[in-house]
Image 1: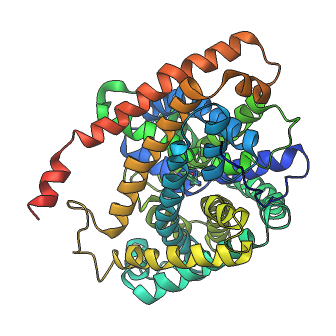
Image 2 (image 1 turned 180 degrees about the vertical axis):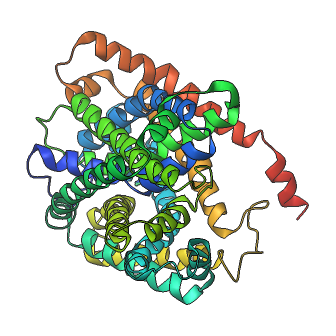
Length: 460
Ligand code: TRP
């Protein structure tokens, strides 16, 4: 019989809204405002949006509920949460590997997330002073070709993330999301209204909502699923860690529904803030990852008050990134501090340092290391992204769904879910047992059985 050691506690969220704000803060990030619009843009618009919405409902929501159930049941960080709940359900403690893989995935994601978020911080200042003297694509080229510049902003972003996480659940993360999230909501609404008034709103609406399925391929479906997963922060324990701090009397199902809806709303609003401007200035909606940096800056250069609206837009992006990055760091920090290995502050600094070093590789992949390929044809940043988002997250998400659906004791689940409509309960259970694992397995296997990258890897 395993003797459960006394783990340090982290405190809890104060009030019902703090969990919602923190989880929404985690979910809403670069994935929504930078990723979603450009992916919708390169995948033809409406059809992608529709498939994305479907993925949120049938895969995202059931897995989000599962993560919160495990987190709150244990009150611990993802590694110990998986271990404790597995033991309480009479299962092997090897399930804790899901927590380990999550912490590893979180570090990989944060390392490049911080480099891109650093570019967003940098753009706040670029947008203030940009006069259109050099083109927006030249400007972007200058930004990413300077290692020192990228490293400076990457460092600054990591320092901000570390400070918030080190300050703790209640005083750091909890307090910051209460400031950051209303600010985000306000800036978002401002940007959308501005775009509606000044941009080509009708074209943006038909681009985003009139589905044209003629160009949908299996790759579109894969991208939409991956995007839904990433956007809801699933598969690595961000939501599980936050769930551990959720008050016991809060309803998990309806809260998850609120968080997923807010996340989706922000992605759509980001589309409605960006595309009207893109179309009004005759820019290319399918221009890829540079969309918010190149196209939006070019639009800000041409518009009236662009030097005011531009910085507001990039502040919005940076705030969203910061409230997400803290959730990537939290699971590992919570683990080291609850085990008593390091204090919360030391743990935050130690993990951030590791992440910061890893991030240097991503910063350099834009310039001096651009010819260095780690996995197949992918540069350092794309390799980190591939490992985390195509391998570790789907694997983590699938195992979480399988654990809750097939291995966790049902009485424990019912304790956490509480009194809900039985139809919703059985629907959720059906999705967690069959649909979500099957869909995620499909994403996952299609990566593995696309064996080209392995061949490339071995042939150099
Ligand atoms: N969801 C965030 C975004 O859309 C990023 C993020 C935070 C994340 N925590 C995560 C992604 C955990 C995957 C897993 O930008």
